[in-house]
Image (cartoon, rainbow, N blue to C red; front, side, top):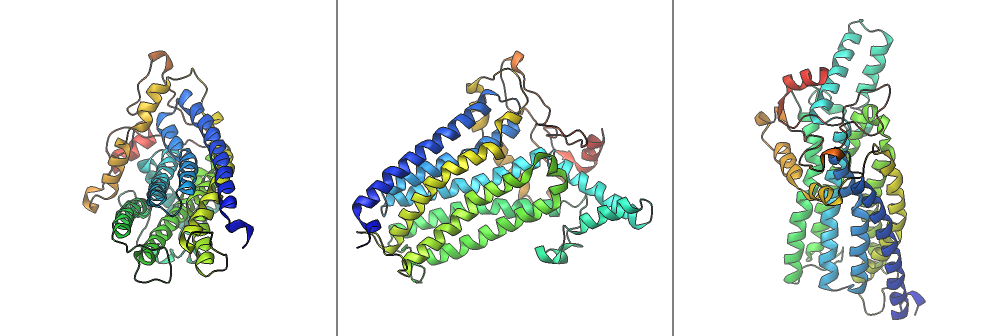
Length: 396
């Protein structure tokens, strides 16, 4: 019997994973605490903390699963972890939109680029317009499978379908994860959920298929969003942020799927007393605990607290009250999935929406590390704006 399948080895691995989990939680705690004590950009930092919180949640949930592997407890905490990862994806897109100034400002920028391109085609702008045209054209190309959408999703301030579809593509992942979690619990209770890819009588196979389709749509939407906004996001160095989110959500998923497949096909011998599915879960959870330490450190680089504008320390209680509010999620969800004819208005949350603290500690409305050569407003105003008024506000 290989050494790694013994109970002593699994116990040692569980204890070692606890050390990794505690370390990652400690690093994330210091990171989040710094944001809460310097909560000078409430909306941006609220999204940032929600993203950073993904790592300790992953670590703790995976550590719990190690001590209850193969049981219903492990099954439930894994579902909770998976739902929060979908929530993290939403917050990442919301953070990127905040840095750009909100959906209305982004669409107005797209319109300005489209107008510049039109003038270039008419010979009014020369080489500069041609360059802008090439950059805009690259957003719709054959290698991203969007060339056929160039005319359908033309960037137009009066037709926000392009951005709306991107947001829906990301947010559908949250709903799919929640619905799948409910189905998985029901199937588990009736004995129809066995983690075996070749068992078509089990609901696991069909859940994996639906999950793969949903996660593919979400990833594709993020890629298209990045291609369409990379010029505007460049001052905020988004590459590492995109990479971290993809590692946390997408890479860990495929890592788990590959490991479970190896166990199911007996390439790796199952752990003692466990079937192939439970053995795969154990190894995956152990690796996640270890990887969370690295990710917690990388989060400090990707979402550095040092970039927040300096000022007096804020009250942590007030910061927490603002952080835990979910009104932004409900509002954003409603406006993202409203019928087309009602989506002519964007709602963007104010930079200090819902945040109260001592007057002498009023937060700064300015963006983090504002670039000298780019005027990128952090957040738009706190009321629904028609596209016409949005343009006027952006110009003002």
